[in-house]
Length: 289
Figure 1 (tube, rainbow, N blue to C red):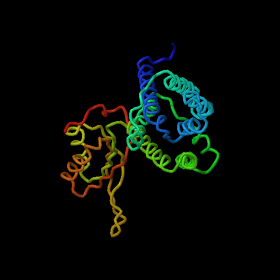
Figure 2: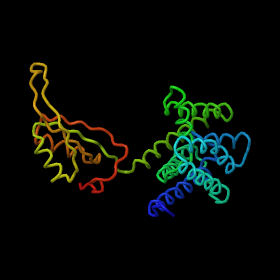
Figure 3: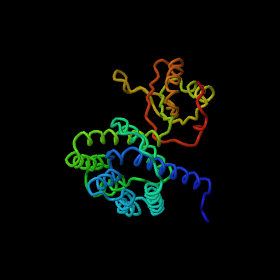
Figure 4: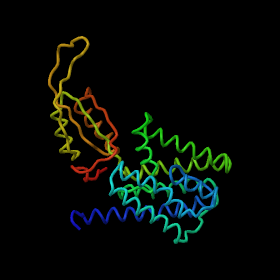
């Protein structure tokens, strides 16, 4: 096919299939048998299943369809098509794969049901699709009202858990909130990976030495901005040019980098920022400790 990158397509497909299998395992092995819930579209599907005893495989596909249509307009058609295939795959997985019930212990169900659900949704997102369309709805709604996407998702989930509390009891709703929290944290972990990156900005009068040791000793790539330093209260009119050094390291390397910079210049100004996603450059080089 023209324009098809086969390695990327295979990688995305493997992520998506693995995500479907993990989500199916979380639902049928933990959540559905114990009448537990999650947030988002999955939570709505589970709620409908418990209240009206609809087949969860059909419900989870049908409830996601409106959000897939929104995704075609809010993201793109390729995303919507991949999401449609993934959701149908999840429905088939729930219908035909005989997952065993793992446990009926409420705490284990709430924690590990959320973990496996988060792994599944996170892997699917790595594959370029969504097994839960709630963020598409939030994106769609956020363009029309003044609330942020996070606030919209929170509001929808509050409604879901309030209905669950009224219809199925407060303990079930509270355990389900724990499931949702566990799933959301796991999704972040799966998407960001084991190695979270940290951006480090260094302003020092010894910038040449800092640059040399960052590259030669730590093996980091650097970016240099031209700036000025000085502008003190007692000498505001006095300043001098300075190279502002920016680099990206793993969070395990931050302390080593700080120590190295302060060896060179104990008055250096160093600040860090979280990098949600990073690729390319010299980031493939693994940290050595």
